Image (tube, rainbow, N blue to C red; front, side, top):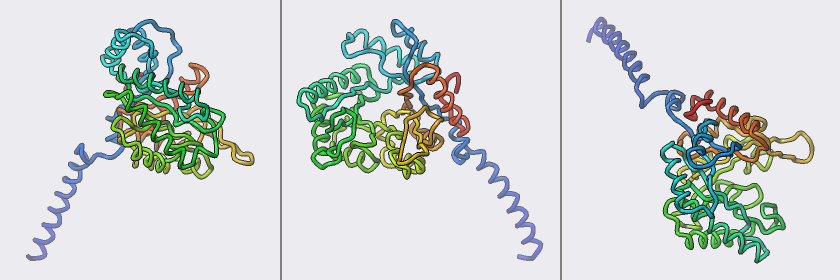
Length: 322
């Protein structure tokens, strides 16, 4: 090949390469992460303050807030007809019923408290299965005086084994077929990390046991606080396919000794919501549920912040206000 042929070949090659690069850039399979995320519609939800009567009014109240997920709208005593009516209305309106709370202490050192908690867990798990909620959620409990408080016994092998057996017993008795029983992550009780949750998940070994993620509850030290993005990525790497619902809160590290961490409205703390939403976008049907705020105005502000972070990341919650 002579020099001129070489130069022509190079020009041709460069032209073809530029064209190929342009085609590749436009191809859906190789679009930038930002472009890919634009088509992902996440699900945000929260409590309702508006009064409603019946499934149709409930759907309107949920959609009025731009939510595509909701807390369970009925109690365990609701008739089958009522439960079915709400489940059908949610499906028709593309609203995911994210979770049914079973907040109680099934490992309490007090026998009466423990038995009442176990009964509540079974009752609420049954409700979640009847209405087709993503999950029934509780904390593992505490061996201390407060049902959700710290105790040195919370981190013993005995307590770990107690959580395993208690959770198995709840699932085995109810035998859910449409929902999952989950344990919310906590700062001072198992599961308190991605690692301990994975160990629990494997030890419980039930098809209808899954994961509930509240990353704010895991930020229990300055090290975790400043590394929240890394921790969130680890949670989704180890637990992502098994997460059925997430809570949306925030936490603020105060500038006073010793360590003070306070729960605050999303946007007022240090939780890395950019990473949280990007990781969640890999599992877009997993709902993100606002909680623990005092009034509707605070929830509006929290939702606005999360939607703003999502927009910057090229994500959407798929409804008005997104």
